[in-house]
Amino acid sequence: MTHHMRGRRHSFTMATTAIAASLATAAGALAATSAPAVADPVPTTTTTTAVGTVPAATVPAVPPMPEARRLEWVKRDSNRLIANRVESLRVAIRRLATRSYLGQDGTTLSSGMQADITGLQALRTQIDGETDLQTAIADRALIFTQYRVYYLVLPVASDVVNVDWLTGVRLPTLQQQITQVQGLENSSNQAYLAPLVSGMQAMAQQVTTATNGLSAQLLSYTPAQWNADHSLLFTAAAGIRTARTAMATAEKDYVHAIRYLHGTRPVSPRPAKPHKDR
Image: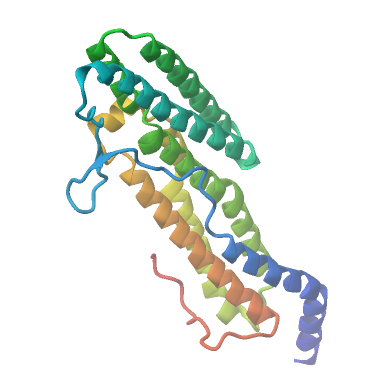
């Protein structure tokens, strides 16, 4: 008994500094659970459909006005619409450059956005040179149907950022936290820590399952697919929600474990049984 307690004190002496640092790290990690989106998707024009579904983006009609003014209005409005999208894409590209964990996904996103910028600028030149009203109107419609900047491109970028942040930043950290807590387990604390470790492992698996192949799937989507199916991003959104919820649960378990090891036992300790799948 005396020898066991000496061993436990020695273990805590070696781990005290690491645990104290881990408490601060865990608190910071919980505060940072929401990765910032690359850009907020701002619908240009919508037509409300059923409750709970993404509103269908439609091409806004040319407002009533004298025939002589309509062509000029289409050109001015097209320039405005294109300028807004080009600026939104440029902002998103700059933000993507600050997220090193994106790796090749970041390169793919930025390249696609730059291609859209080039295409939109060429479309603007084409519209400016039109002399036929109906042709100009048809060209203007391409801003919405061929370049789904606000309904597809930017939402996909935000989703990929979230997925890659979870899998490339948070998941490796969680695995390190699991290993840390396992390394501090002993016969005197195992009844409390083992269920927490089991729960963290289960949540890590949920994150892996929910995000498996998700970035590649998102990056493969095209405007034509979104035009045909406005719920295209629903599956990805559900997977991201599941992964973020699982990660938050695992982080809470980690904080419980570190506080327990540091001598700040939670008011309501976890039951000594494995977590159920959430």
